[in-house]
Image (tube, rainbow, N blue to C red; front, side):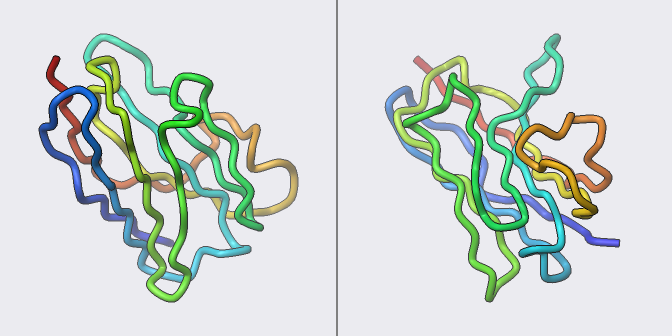
Length: 126
């Protein structure tokens, strides 16, 4: 089973930037559906970006144009570059993976993801 470790969270003022990292214990390209998700206190976990087995991405409307997910397959690492951060982006951010067995990664439900990291906290102040 793949293990995921997030890092890079922190506190930043509105308008600032952060880059999160998710280090996987094995090669994920073409083998796993990947994604970044977030959860704020009192809210349900929501998808930030889903990445399919070929690297295509689907972003949540709330982060489209501000966040960019990219992979370094040589390092088995997934990144989330977050720009123009807003207070409403404050949340615990999680990396997740689900073995690709067919079907669409880009529309996979949150509950379908089998492996999760421990999360990294992002706090954006106004």
